Length: 428
Ligand code: DSN
Image (cartoon, rainbow, N blue to C red; front, top):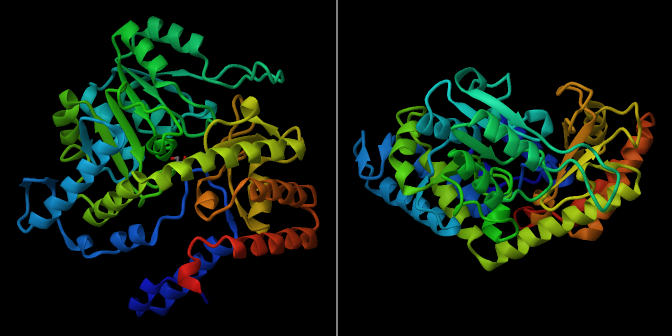
């Protein structure tokens, strides 16, 4: 069984067997989860490096443990690379996740009970944008904006951020903070427009760029850094780094934000992840990365068009980024997001179900799928391969009652993946 060269160091049969299984799953099935990617071997090696041994509570030059001379240099390197990549004043590379990064900014800039204006979960926002299921909604007072109604007029696509509603809610509720950014939204988000509205009401602006961070670094999405008081993100999505989070902010907020991450919220930073973040930030600064992010967007556009030709309705009638949000109801009114995700899993196509704007079904069932092109673009797929995947998805979902048919799609997908293996150099 193909496996990573690092696994040779693990003399634990149960663990190595599971690692080999996951290696096979990732390289023989198609990965279409918009928030996932294939990291470089260098990022994986740094994640599995000696830095995992070190406790380093605090920040470079101000640690609560000895022996941090090298760790300090590594964390400084990651911070320098990150501020240079986005043109920001200050970086904090310690958040363990995007959710932690968001909560740290709220904690740093607000008092409990303050009002935050953010995008509602079922309109494309994130749990930490004030979902009732998130701790954020118990500490701060959220007001939610959403997207415009569905429109079938290709000249006037609906389901885009409702700027009129955003402005009206901002003036009515005078939030202390406005959050821009989404988790299931396929259009560009204009940071200048958000800054303008924030300035009209004297609000701070946080841009949650977890999804487009890589596109921003590559120049395929406008950069919020010059506009936002703080910019949060995960490092493992379009940015193609290790799992983790980061925050960029203006100098005036740096001390408070650092204090909110540690000691406010987290303990010891994961210095092995920070080493891998440094590797990823350098990779993202190379010209090849811009070519990659442009291809991610071109592939998503081609994928959206191909899905439409197969009878799927694409939310907002297209995409400007790495995501395609599919409303399954026009394809098959009975087909839920949950069932589609399960059928596609059997067909070797990994997706996640997602609510579409104003979804009548629950977040657990949903009427939609969220698809993304970052991972398979890393593997080398282009527009033609994404068009083929759209056809195979439609075939599997149409014939879902016929297991032989689903199996045939799985074989076709395995053949496609054998030509686009991101780790081919490991598996020979
Ligand atoms: N994990 C994020 C995503 O998939 O977009 C949401 O938290």
